[in-house]
Image (cartoon, rainbow, N blue to C red; front, side):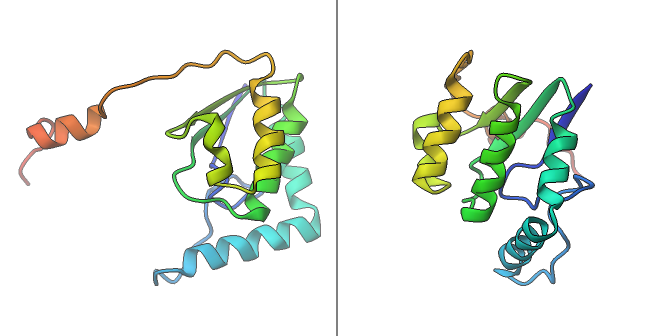
Length: 145
C-alpha cells in the first residue's frame, strides 16, 4: 500500500484532499490552512490522520519546501516523520537540501525531523536544470489551442 500526502504547506485533513477552499484573495490560503491545522490539533484529527497514514508501507511526501511551513504545519510534519521513524519507509522530495529545512520550518522541529529522516536514509541528490522549464522555454510540449 502506498499513501501520498500533501506537503506540510497544505492542510492536514482526514481525507487527504489537500488545502481547504479559499476565497481566492491573496493571503487567504495561509490563514485558512493555519485555522484548519489549529482545529485539527484541537479535535485530534492530526493524530488520527497520522495513525492512518502510518499504516501504509511507503509514505511519500512530495515537494516539501515549496512554501514556508509555519509552526503548526512543521509540528504535523515532525509528528508524521516521528510516527513513521524506524517503522515505515518514507520518501521525501524537495528542492531544499535537508540542511536547509530550518528555512521552511522552526529550527528545533527541522533539526529533529531531519535527524529522523537521515538516520538509515539513502539520500539521492539530483542536480541540473528543470526538464519542465527547459521544455517550456524550447517550446516543446506547447500546443496551440
